[in-house]
Image (tube, rainbow, N blue to C red):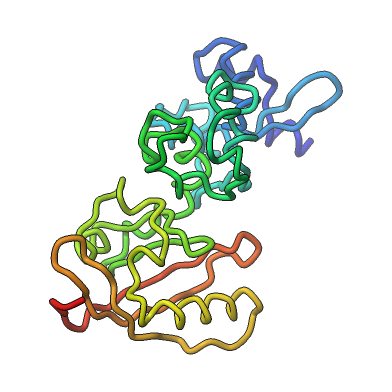
Length: 246
């Protein structure tokens, strides 16, 4: 009984969303919509379907209105290679530097000529499906904020972009060693390693961040665990003063 309430047949999902059967199957195989296998058929999660429609700007059908979640449904973390495996874009993966070097986060290589993607990270379906939902909440914060994993920034809010002279496209994929002053970096890395080991860490740290035009900016940072299993963290930055020296 629970399964009938929570899941739809592919045919039912297609009818409700006014798309073809093959379109829904494509969403499932591309891991855009969660589904479970039952015998020789897929059962589509209603909540996951609504979340996908919301993220892609599609209208929510009346039949799914009651499934509209208050909190985002996060697609499990997976590599870009796995995400694109059964799609046409996956043909580009074999020669991509991310595949050759087994990079855990593909967008750290966004400036490399051997990257197999032609779009910006923020326009990429993989990024929008896997990573964007993990940091969208920071746009409701008034404090400069980023979400990061493995000391790589997934995304920042407008206040962070102003603080560091960046935009959404340049913030995504930035490594901490690219924006944290060398004198501050070892302490930041040490704190991060202790957090990964669940060891006690000071609640705040004074550091200097690189502003792309104005030089170094002194800030106090506060870091909070978002998901220890995924290794994702929230960083809040409180500006103190600006330094014009390097």
